[in-house]
Length: 50
Image 1: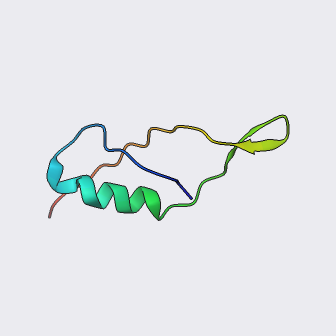
Image 2: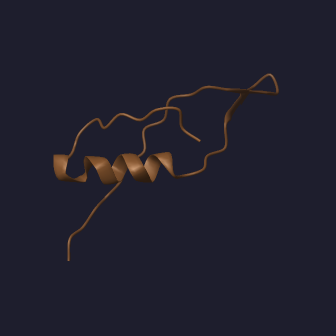
């Protein structure tokens, strides 16, 4: 699970939803020398209104 998130850009109305989506997602940790390590990732989310 992510330790923290940061919205880099986009419409403010979607920031909370993007943070929730990122925090509730599961990821495979980065690995170095066979050990999990902390990494930074940029994850684009696209929202559309109907």
